[in-house]
Length: 149
Ligand code: RB5
Image (cartoon, rainbow, N blue to C red):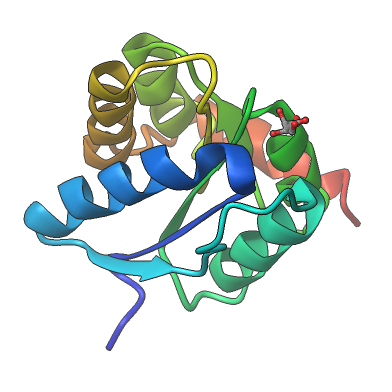
C-alpha cells in the first residue's frame, strides 16, 4: 500500500464526533482512512494526538493528515513542530484550497467547536482535491523548510 491515498485522522476528545464524520466521508470518496483515535470521550491532551498524526505524514506512511481539537489551533501548533509538516487551521474553503495551492500543506486542522459538519466536509474536500501550484510558491515553501535546518 502506497501513501498516495492514505489519510491519517486524529483529534483530542473535542474532535471525536466530527473526526468520525470526516473519516466516513473521505472513505466514501476512495481514500484509505488511517484513524488513530482516540476512541473514548475522556479528556485528553491534543499535543500527543497532533504529533502522532504528524509523524505518519512526515515518515511518508500517509499522504495527508487531518486533525481536530476544539479550535483546531492547539493540535495544529503541535503538528507543526514535527519536521516536514505544514499544517494550517481552516474555517473556510478558500483557505483550505490556498494552503494546498500556495503552501503545499500536508496537514489540515479543523476546530470541531468552530465549524459545523457540513462546512467541515467541504473544507476537507477543498483541501484534498487541490494541487500544489509550485513555481514561485515552491521557493517560499523551501524557505519554510530551511527554518527547520
Ligand atoms: C480542550 O478543551 C481544548 O483546549 C482543545 O480541544 C483545543 O481547542 C486546544 O487548542
